[in-house]
Amino acid sequence: MRSLLVLAAAPLLVSAAPSGPDRSVLPPTTPLCEAPAPTTSGAALGTPAPAQGESLMDPRFGGGLGFFEVDGAAVGPRTTSTAPIELELTGPARRRADEPLGLALGFVNRSASAAVVMRALDGSLEHWREPHYDIHLRDEATGRVYRWDYHGGRCGNVNPVRDEDYVTLAPGERRDDVAGGWSGLRGAAVGAPGRYAVWVVYRYCGGPAQGIPLGPNAQRPDVTRGVFASNAITIEVR
Image (cartoon, rainbow, N blue to C red; front, side, top):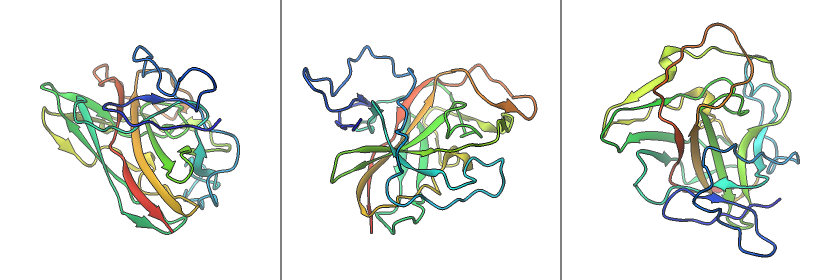
């Protein structure tokens, strides 16, 4: 299923091109914390990115990474500054095919109260555990929407959640060190030349987890829940 992206004043769920009544934007009553749409089982966009992992414990091991087309609805990028947690995405304007995009993500607490967010975890990429850090891109030539994902087998164990995986943002505070290495922001690469809009969706809704932790998890009940999309940036891949 091909995805059609529509920009709006706030993060929206965007569905595939409709046949019949216009369903390109889901109703505002649609819960943003419902499960995100999967990616297709076909080939990744362009040449698959090279394996970057160093061990079988790393989900990047094996070369199954790539931008796979979203099969259904996708959350669009933020276009205003009204969200209580604002994500600010930056990155280079140009990259070579298969060169890491080198993205950076800032978290800003726009609310009047402290907010607790989480770094990406072992299992975030596969949607085994929250938070999710979903890197999306839209091919400006075709309008198709893709997500950085991993297709392939991996170890069933996951690293335990640590105290340092939780980050508390004071009102008005900005942090650029939240995402962490498991987010894929530095290593995500596009294998096909083109012009792309890129954005990130952070999701924490307290959903069930998969995998067998290799130790006790540090648990906190005060993590801010919701789905927060970054701004979109444009990257030209040559």
